[in-house]
Amino acid sequence: MKTALLDKVEIHLANPVELQVEWIGQEEPMMQLLACWLTVNPGDQPLCPRLVGHPGLGKTTLGMAAARKRGQAVYVLQCTADTRPEDLIITPVLGEKGNIKYQASALVSAMITGGAVILDEGNRMSEKSWASLAPLLDDRKSVDSLVAGISIKAHPEFRCVVTMNEDDSTFEIPDYIMSRIQPAIELPFPKAEEELRILRYNLPSAPEELINICLGFLQKAHDLDLPYSIRDGLNAIRFAQKLGMLRPAPWDKLFSQAISQIVGQDAFDMEDVADRRRREGQHLPNMQLGDFFFDEDSPLNPDKD
Ligand SMILES: Nc1ncnc2c1ncn2[C@@H]1O[C@H](COP(=O)(O)OP(=O)(O)O)[C@@H](O)[C@H]1O
Ligand SMILES: [Mg+2]
Image (cartoon, rainbow, N blue to C red; front, top):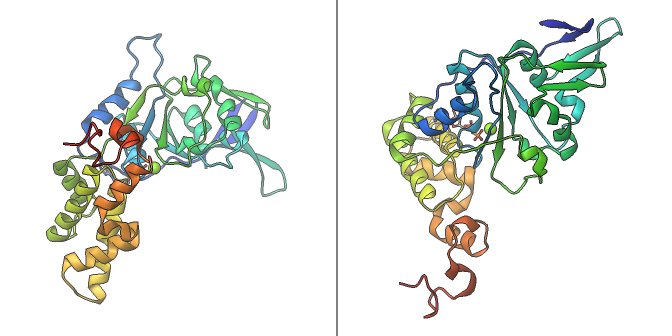
């Protein structure tokens, strides 16, 4: 394991992620993330954007693939509700000889080595933990470790991106932090042609018919703005293929079983589910005036055709 010496304190570094990921299609968010990470002149600072979108659409993958495109090592720090400020920076651990060792987080390891870090699912993290990162996310580009008694300055090549899931487990992140993780880059549902390539790339040995059944399911879900994702589709294909090994059946049957065990019975009446979600206001952005005040069939309903 690598170490670094900072102010005469030995710091043990985390390892970067080894996974080789390739980004398929969806060029707009990739271009935007790479643009954020550029510097346009020697005094310029890179931006730390936030990638937003439903779970399973490829946010973490995009961050890793963008770092890879830049030829940079990538570190992933999984943020949770329990992440404490020191977990983000340096934690003391017991060494072999009973001594205290200082272990750098994925974030600090990226800061020291000039790598890129993904602060993954940052919406889950508390304000207290976010607050410790405020100096890193503005012009100071440094963090303080109270535990090791040192200040750590980011390498000029250090890059950062935060991913955020659009689900209801989101913490209220204070404005002074939100203003430091700008801009927002939206990851939309992929178009059919792109989604087909993503499925094929991730599961090169899956039968074409099964891939197409899955694609039809996902595209219908996207049209209805239901949060079923590429990850759900990939897992359903994998499960259907495995079931088929032990109990052969037509692919549509196997896929139905697989998807219902992955996203639930809702998969079979997506229109009703979409309708219910709209009514319950789970998806306000797509709502029209008529959804708030009127019966669907009321003559007063402005959405009635
Ligand atoms: N454009 C893409 N190119 C390649 N793989 C993708 C793409 N979009 C999604 N995936 C695949 O979808 C799955 C879920 O992606 P992930 O990055 O974990 O989603 P998120 O972080 O948004 O929850 C992964 O297996 C990933 O490889
Ligand atoms: Mg993720």
